Length: 105
Length: 116
Image (cartoon, rainbow over the protein chains, first blue to last red):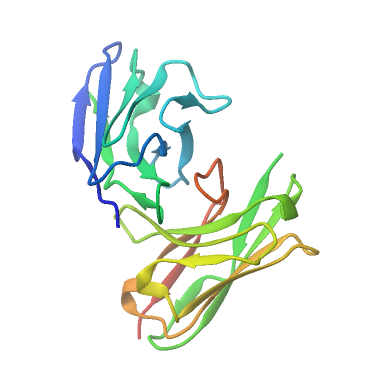
């Protein structure tokens, strides 16, 4: 299985720029996707195929990367962005990263 | 509006079976691959199984192969997950999702608790 590694937590202030990283154990080309999950809710798709913004998602969210290193950027961060963010690859059997919990100071 | 509504979860004893259903609406169900993704309490997301748009191809994570079966009824716009020989480690919220590689739509989830 392709293992995806994310930092477990980040704390930022509203208005700042935050980058959330995801490293794959092998190249997944650009077959990387990002989700947001708020407590008690199902996940929602933010970015697909590394850099494509899902319809209805604010332009504050962006994605980049290819191969093994990927980044989700939120700029500027808002209070409502408090959530856990997951990366997911579809190069082979789907796997998810462990999630990055974003907290606002 | 795309809607995915799961049902069938609950408390089940280890070794027993349970069948989950997912009623889909708001899109042409027979045009899309579908998948189940689960989340153990306080844990991350874990892909379980995928089925092609016509049901001809199915894929499973290793830990459920031979125990779980994903299926679909396109006439009823319904996705299923038959779970046999359940284990405590199968305890999770099970989400129905649309998509075969990434998942733009998710149901609200149904909780399966495997415990004696």
